[in-house]
Amino acid sequence: MAEYKRLMDPETGEIYDRTAVLADGDRVTSAAQRESYAKKQSGRTAEFTVTQMRNIDEVIERVSDKHCGYLLYLQCFVNYDAILENPDKSAMSREDMMRTLKIGRTTLHHFLRETTEAGVIEEDGDKYRLNPRYHFQGKTDNTAVIKTFVAKVKELYTEVNAKDLGFVYKLLPHVHLETNTICANPYERDVENTLPLTKEDIAQLTRVTEKSVYTKLRNLRFGDQYVFAEVSYGNARYYKINPFVFYRKSGQPDATLREMFSIRNNFAKRSA
Image 1 (cartoon, rainbow, N blue to C red):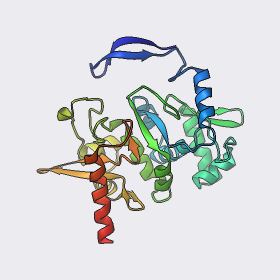
Image 2: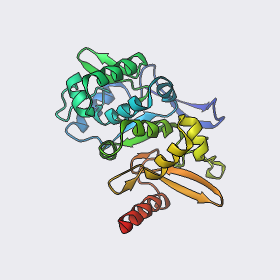
Image 3: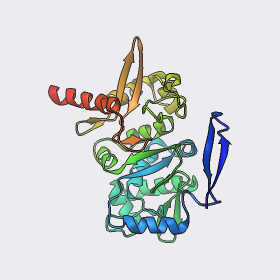
């Protein structure tokens, strides 16, 4: 059972008047509530999975770009107990994982060795489980999370390589709650104080060359959708991530954000 307390975020100084303090080991709800919720969702295809923004820097420090890309895709196959499962609800084996990721045995071996040593994926008998400290499926009252929309990421995986997907993964801790801007202060509530990251900032953050960063930011796409939008303000440029792929708030993105990505997509269609 959660207690509600007035707390301060030690990193941002932000005051939260009514914060749910959960029992040790209880991610969002009780085990019984999770089981009940999973039963209600049985047979449905998950719309999104959830990433803990404050924690995945630990993943980024320990896991290579390419393996972060595989990890992002595998989130699409996690159930409410954080177990990786096939579309028929059976637990995903190594063979299933190879088929799902479209990789060979050696590549899978290196991926699992790195992610299990990092504590990101856990072996649970003959099952594989994503550590919910980083990724899970289900509801949460925590606002320091970002939703990953399953259908869009599955589509994205068919058109970009795993290393590029890993580049996207490394930017998830920097998505602003209100605007989807890639920024230095993603928990800042006042949008007038947002500190957007430039391509130079992003290059330093991701350890990728500026030229490569700029190419990815402008060109990563799937179907007629772009992953990023570039915003020009005088001589400055900054970037937003597609809210139909990754989004922090509940409900639909606001009209301005929807228009920004729709217009870019519509220009692309018109010039095709």
